[in-house]
Image (cartoon, rainbow, N blue to C red):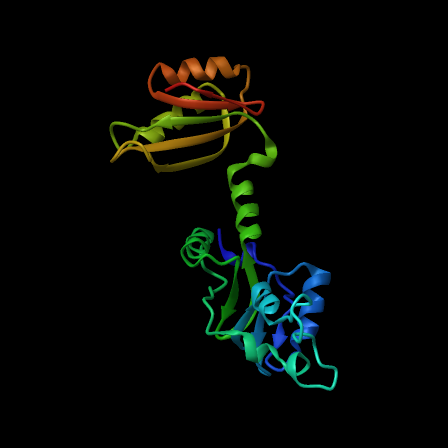
Length: 225
């Protein structure tokens, strides 16, 4: 899945000369965590985070740190003064998995989406979580099974064929490196329809041929290894 399918469009952006006070007011009203900063041509030139704005605000607890109403100081501070230049961005055709990796590596809450220099949207941690929930089929509920894939490369195909043969319909399948066993991978299968089988029937089926690590049914996780 691609960024363009999950990004937020119609982004609230700041101009280089936008007032930091105005940005702070929008921050409070809209609960926004970052503002892309664009030039007059709509090209991304920087980003301002909620922390940047908080750091720019005077503290009411420190004498002499109040805003002077005669102009100057905070009243003349602009987005261009506090923005981070050349922020990390992604194109709209980037994979969502790539976005998740960048967010983790750079420890940021969102990334501007830029095509040919122009700001097209923003993709945030919340968007990545929405993508993950949709991909995992969690909104549909149903049982989930964690299975160790030891043996030949075709183990995943065998697992899915065995489930299909029993009339069991699955919504999503993830595979990942087993964090406790070097060189091993696990499959995580979400079930949409058990057909005429019970969860216990599926557990018995999988355990007869594979190493079933755990299953989740009706919100309860049962560890088997």
